[in-house]
Length: 117
Image (tube, rainbow, N blue to C red; front, side):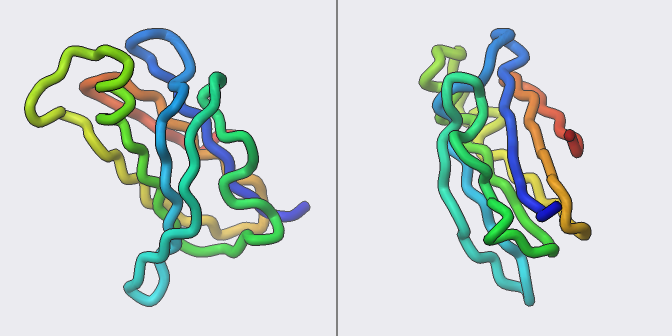
């Protein structure tokens, strides 16, 4: 089995997938942060393809940036200035050549994540 990376974003305040949420993937190596990909979630809160497919997969340290503030603005969540959650960074390590699933459960004032399957 080759390694790859996926995500799924759920809006727990509205009880639905977070459609149209922008995400960026970075690789962190040697003190440098390199943008690998920019994607947007579909109507199921997932990306249309793997964020990091097996042919591009390498173990190491990565960061997903979830642009929650833009999503919350667009979905009519009452705005505050500044938003409590705007851009959510998740930095994590992938040490095995396996499937890594990094979901985000989102509300205007909290979020959680875990290594899914």
